[in-house]
Amino acid sequence: MTKQDLSSTIDNVVIRRRPTTRKSGHISHPDSTGGEAITRDIPCYSLKQGNSISITFEIDDLDAVEDDLVGFGGWFYTSDSEGLDISTLNVGKSRGIRINGGDWHAFGSLELKTYENYFNISNPVFTFTATKDIEIAFYLLDCGIVEHEYMTQALDVKPVLLNNMYTFAPEANFVKHQGKVLMNNEALLSKELKAPLLLKSCNRCARFLPINIPNERHSLSFSNHCIKNAPCVHHGFGVLKDVNTQERLDLHHGFQLECRFCKKFAVNAALNPQRNANQMKEDGARRRGFEVLLQNVFNGSPQLAYRAKNNNKELTSEVWNKFERKCFKCNCALPTMNKMHLDHTRPLALLWQLDETATCLCGSCNSQKRDRSPADFYTVDELAELSRITGIPLHDLQNSPVNVRAVEEIIKRMEWLMMDFCEEQRLNQIRDGKNTAELFLKALQKVFNQTQYGKDYDLIDIYRTYRGFKK
Ligand SMILES: [Zn+2]
Ligand SMILES: [Zn+2]
Ligand SMILES: [Zn+2]
Image 1 (cartoon, rainbow, N blue to C red):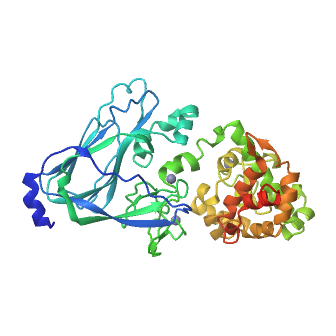
Image 2: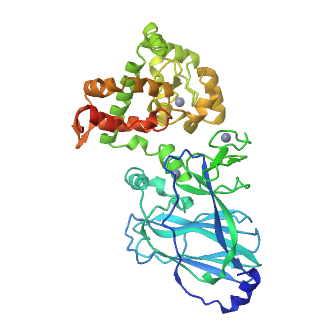
């Protein structure tokens, strides 16, 4: 149908309400680094001046109760900065919309139903009216009761974190019980007009979420990476790779690797100190396991020779002095050595040992950093300074590679790892019905999978074979 054909049918458009056809949800990428992109062509609705499309999110009969999160919304595109008027009904607090022609926009809300407001839910409606001829398109319209472990946990330990969730719609709308999305005027859908949509991966939740190119500053689900320091030349942040065409996409400001939702809950570590006792025990066991494994593996290597020559106290005082006896992150003075917390700089979780490249932090900065990669925790300027002080190449601080040498060394000692190490480290126990050696190997496998060498090894399979659990 051409544009002309369409306009001639507009008078005959039957206003009807029925659920729009919805895809199962977000596309995701199994080993997302945050640097993958996908492009899509989304069919447009052709709106003549005076036409409108109403979207009703039917959530009233979902039986939401107090403490349920109820969300609705999606993304829309408009061809023009002017010519579109959006009115709402029953919407309450919702994400702000600044219309810009040629861009995609996020709209919707996510709110906790409290005692005051849960018993009186009405269906929110967004009406998009054309004040001149325009094209608009929609992506992933959804609504319902939302559930996600981060938010469930937040409700338990820090409910204040949920106060501004409406600004995280629609990317935080992990809908568990789906409501209906009703749209009128679906006959305005053009068979020919398409709006290009660019999606970028999140390295935590692995979902592909919309970004705007070239108007990167109109950020949607990802914050920008370099604002004053643009152009962003950081791999993964400022350069994306289209997973279908392998084409390279150079950005100006770039985007964070994590979506805003993951940044809020997983990266900014709001919830981390609240991890439960069992998780802490498991974290602790894994950390200890990695430490001891690395010590064994690098036995006799230059790294260990350093440690043998310089005992721990010397290492500590060397780092303390190198950082001028101040916390590198917040600059607070650390007048005595025992006020200092040595941080691995490069994460232990990626098999980097504590050595002379450690960072001097205060207790509170150290507990905020935990297992986060340097690029997650430090600003661009701080990374450059940290590279200068520690001698770690800036590239490594920006990208947090796995310690490939450690992986190689572990592979050389596979039999020792399976038969001796897993035995000696008292990893051969059953806890909560799980074999602790297998839990440890599973954590190690995750690291292996990020490397060319390591990903061919199936550690649990090897372990079971060595142990005679299978022939
Ligand atoms: Zn995410
Ligand atoms: Zn950047
Ligand atoms: Zn500090």
